Length: 308
Length: 152
Ligand SMILES: [Zn+2]
View 1 (cartoon, each protein chain N blue to C red):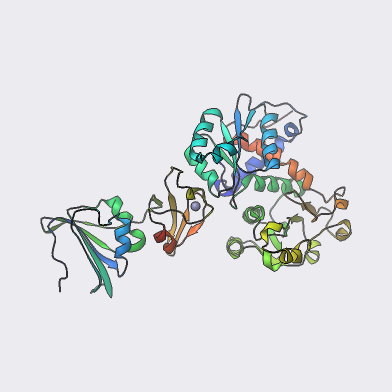
View 2: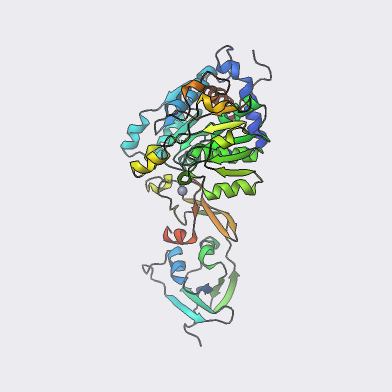
């Protein structure tokens, strides 16, 4: 089974994956040995650098007893002009499943069409990054026990950030209410907002972070990237307008979660790291059990009901 | 008034929306390099529509697959296969769920922009009214104008 976009999964399938991931947490932490994928090989095809995602896939596979091929030299064969199709033909013979990260949009679906082994999209251009969405959903359920009915604040660069595009769709599907906080120049694309509304999602838009904090269950921060702006002055206008530090959190809900796909720049002050609100490091770790569950599913291996 | 004489054998595509006949030719890969006679009239008054284009292709019977390529520019056209000056068959154009190797995706950062990549170009037809077509790989929407500009 491939995972190219979140649309490949029904809500029930997503929940079942997240339940498997929950069971696999002790294995991800290394406290339980469970070699479910012994003898299986994952190819990590990173045509563009993303150390966090690559290491997360690698750890997930190894914790389940599988092997990993890291094709960093793939970059050089691409420079020699090899097509993605040809690279995939080689991989088809070496691996049982592949995770692919590629600068070109549509590359993951293309790779899936080119070979028989299951393909997991680890980010394609400005397109999809479904394993990030799954680990975000996992983290929200871990902290709140549910997704439906939550007030989720998405903050920062909502225009270019594919993470928040994909996450907002998923949250809408699961019945969360969304408040979209961004400067006017980085607003969520209109077609996504109208998609969300047409699926019955309660969506508010704002440019003010502090006024929305008190009523939110999850605050999902993103960084505003310099390279999105043609000139420095435009960037300086919006850089650093949404910053959280401990002082901002005096009247928030006690179970409120602060999340961030990382790396952060200055959106979340380190004074928050040691508070109950800080979920971003757990969130990053959650990529491991989530990707473990996904690897099992794509290879047709059932996760046992009771582990440990 | 008959502007083009009847043909003995071949295919007549009638009621092409006025002005679209050149696109029909492109979609059928008719570019003048073939030796069979082709007659084309454009913007003729019609009883069914205000104006129409008509294309007569002699000595060639278009297959259903070739005709279905025309759905984007001439979905309402009527097609007759002619044998010995008579209509041997009438055919309809149908827009399928996917356009395979008919047009390229026009998004600049799509994987299919690399012309060395060998897999077929696939555009998915999500709806016909209003028309919504997306690349099967990058999922970007493609306008009709973009598709016509990117015909293979
Ligand atoms: Zn495309």
